[in-house]
Image (tube, rainbow over all chains, first blue to last red; front, side, top):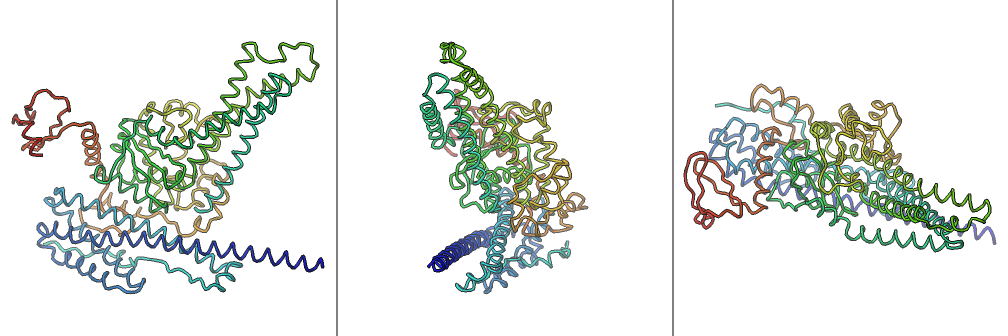
Length: 185
Length: 431
């Protein structure tokens, strides 16, 4: 009789613990989704700002066709990217192309004096920061989720209910570390 | 980061219970002191005082605080740089909603955050701060304030403040009425030695309880400042930004800020009451903030941007052991991989031979050099306040911007630079 009671109590404890773990897994997964939505909003914002930027700078930077085209092409590549890995690659390229454009813009005093350009520059610089910060938060959320999925004893619950590990969003910026090629005409 | 919040909740609970016991004890002793057997009534009275104070500050606290400090709400078009910086730090902190942004027209550089929950938070900065800091420094300050929001420090300080207020109030009432002839022990001289002891305990408690409560409050406030600094470093990945901002703020004789008081002091980024006093009793028990010089030294000496780095650096700089809550250090993000970002690009840009020699690593740092922006920023802040106060703006063809006060009688104004006379009626109609 008393053995039965002990077994029942133990069972109840285990079930309660499992429910707690399951709920925290769901919470972490939702947190990750929410964090990704934030990254996505900022990436879209950058995407939408580019046509405006092109319109503003093309009058001033007639001799920088290559730089401008690199931005346009990178933007098109973002649109075509399928998987998260491809997307990260393309977004990284776009960020680099934009960085190069702003670096080149430094040598156009007329452009730098334009109110419109300054406003766009602050907008894009801030969006660039927001991408960085929201990505930082997303990656932390993914790490939280993955730790929970892989660590004992929560890995048992995660296995039973098929929780998938999250994917980090790392912008491929290896190429960014090498000096950009800037041509002066 | 997430764990630090849980730890804070537990701490809030412990603190509230501790202070509530102190408050209840004070109420009981006061009751017994005035009439035998009235102890329970004293406890009820203490509870009622506390409840009223809590309800008032809980429902109205933010709005009262913002209005007494003369803060004005800002939109995204008004001051885009400030707005963007707050939005960026909201993302970095992972707050559910961007706080409302306020600006206070005051030359003393300072900033604070209010709001019990992250969803209803507000962050306010003074115009003096906006004019003085560049983008990176502003980012550090805003990150520090949003860390207070994220770590629920505001709720903690609200609880603490209300309890301290109730204790001070009760003790004050008790002492005053005892001095002015109340209290049964005085009237009934024939009671035994037990009464004398009760009298001593009552008076001691009335004197010591407010002091004790305030010491608890200040000690917690200082700890929360360190945690907010550590969080700011982790959010921005650039501790030098906040360090440089603190140096600039400490460099001016800040002076007293309108609407700031002892009760609200712990909400600001630096103590808004006494710049001079801070130098005098830097390490004193009654300071709401750690000394700025020490905060700067820690931030400047950090090799990484994580909580662990902050804790280690704190120990190295001050010689004391860890300052952050244990749960914050056990957090998975506390240690791994939080490098300081963008420093190399900053150094590059400072010693850069010419423009366009190197592009910044993209994704982490502003593309816009901060120094050139700060003058435009100061001007934008001024323009915004003029517009809010109803000043009209007339752009002269010579490039000067004339600012016209709202109550001007004359309808014509002469440009002081080129002498052109502007017709204000026509200008306002065309604008």
